[in-house]
Image (tube, rainbow, N blue to C red; front, side, top):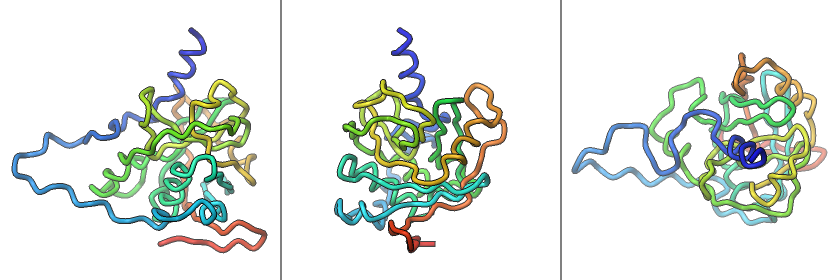
Length: 221
């Protein structure tokens, strides 16, 4: 019972955003124009080799966190994160859920400081298929958050403070922190109430980098 309770609690999205496939707006009126087709994103057609060559830097109010990715194990999760980063969707969002000594969770597009447009709302509900794999959920791993139901991951991700073997093979681990775990720890140690930070740390900017000692940035903004 304890195991199931912990896992169920962990699987929830950090804020009461709509479930994938639903809308926060009133029921669509009859004869209303159909929603426009979402615009293509930079990594939509990228192959595994291309995505494996990319890293990312999350520049937060508390400091920078750098990541590497494992598209050979979770290609759609990596593609999703790279697209969110390259298009600036993660900019000004917060780490809106913090579980002390466990995880920090971000990626909720509804926490942006600017206006959440229709396009942003649509992107926030774009579903990513489950990709459970053999990557162990250890300290520093970044993985996809989702609801209890399968295939409900969207834009929310979490970074582990310590190992959580009961998540192995159930959640889509897709990358690892390569620099800035001290920043992750600092965010995790800030005061929280019911897993909600009293002062959520905001992401100032997230950018895609070419992995290597002389990283070059890639961003549409």
